[in-house]
Length: 122
Image (cartoon, rainbow, N blue to C red; front, side, top):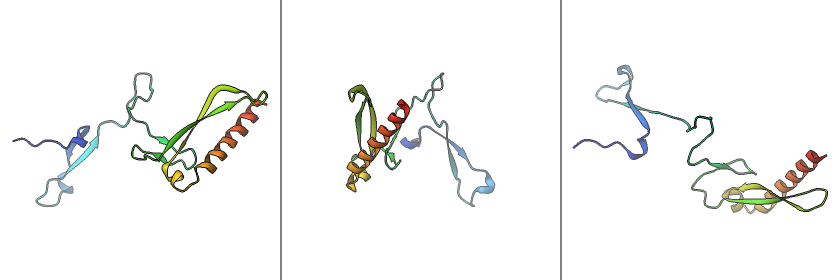
C-alpha cells in the first residue's frame, strides 16, 4: 500500500534536505509552500478567508474567535444630523468583550470617527 500525504500539507512541495544536513540514519524532508496569496489577473486578493483585525487592539480575529463581533455604526451628516445611508464597520475581538471593555472601546472608536469626519468636512 502506498503512503498517503498528510491532508493539511496538500499544497506543499516535499523536497529532500541536502545530505550534509541529515543526521546519520535519518532522511529529513523540507516542506516549502507553493504559493503565498491567491490573486487574479488584476492583482486583487481572492483568498477564500481573509482574517479581520480588531478595531481597538489590532489583534487578528481568527476563525476560532467566536466571541468577536462586527458592529456597523451609521454615519451622520454633521450639519443636518441626519443618517447619510452609509455606515462604518467596527470589529471588536472576543478578548476585549471578555474584559468588559467593548462599550468603552466602541464609544472611543465612534468619537474618533466623528472627529475625523468633522475635520474632513471643513
